Image 1 (cartoon, helix red, strand yellow):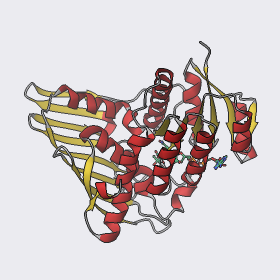
Image 2 (image 1 turned 180 degrees about the vertical axis):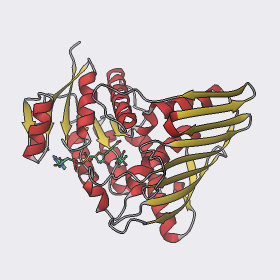
Image 3 (image 1 turned 60 degrees about the horizontal axis):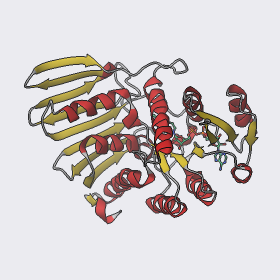
Length: 343
Ligand code: NAD
Ligand code: 89V
């Protein structure tokens, strides 16, 4: 069988990681790229030796010749591009955040289902090596049944220089980063039925909230706290590490700084380091995220070849995106929001 052919739309800041991830997969070849900015098209096309370059996604689809499309643009274009892929019956990956609103995200899932194409949201944080290690401990039963958890990302890292659009949106940290942490909470503790959230904006130079504290009632009885901040100045900057605390009926788990994992249970206390690999093209401190990009793309290629739904399909990710919407609603109203009312 020949290589699976892919096309990528949006050759910006983050897409470079995605291009590296695709290049590392022996069974995949990116045959066409698209960006409305000719300079980004030139930079990425030259770096990854892609000859076929388009400034218009419509033109790229009209010419065809690829088995899937990887949409790496910012959120405003996601719905139109997924619907374009659906019209051409081309399986699609779409970067997070899924869409500007939950209504848009639902329409995108409906369009993909009507066209019979797989749709995966590039929700890569659950693919980080330390998060996979936490999940493996939970699944092993070493700490018994979890009843409480915390997923925490607190940083003072300057994310605005690489991604200037993050400073401009009315929504910031929940939509951009909290979305990953909420997905990790779902991955570890299952779906959540209720959300209570509070937000703050500490940095006066940005438009959206940069601190959020969220309380989730999971359907299986777990209570979790998901807290995120880009206004936290620590003596040692942990970006982009997610810390996890879990209390279970038979023990506890702590994922802390420098990827240290402590599991305490009936068998005693085990300490290990669950650091991500530093891939040849990766750079610290981003390597944790970069490795997860490679892993989710491998997952997509495998599932596409097998004809099976990817773990973070559009259908699945609606439940993560509903938590985002619920967090904003809860913070705005000062009330607890039922997730079922949104889905
Ligand atoms: P960016 O602005 O640097 O790049 C986006 C590119 O898309 C730009 O070059 C722009 O010209 C192009 N573009 C936009 N609309 C287009 C259209 N309709 N047709 C063709 N080209 C179009 O943005 P970025 O920082 O690379 O972020 C892209 C996406 O990746 C965002 O949704 C962001 O949230 C996400 N992201 C994800 C992660 C992660 O870990 N999953 C990390 C960073 C960014
Ligand atoms: O992963 C992301 O989505 C990035 C960042 C880590 C900066 O929040 O936008």
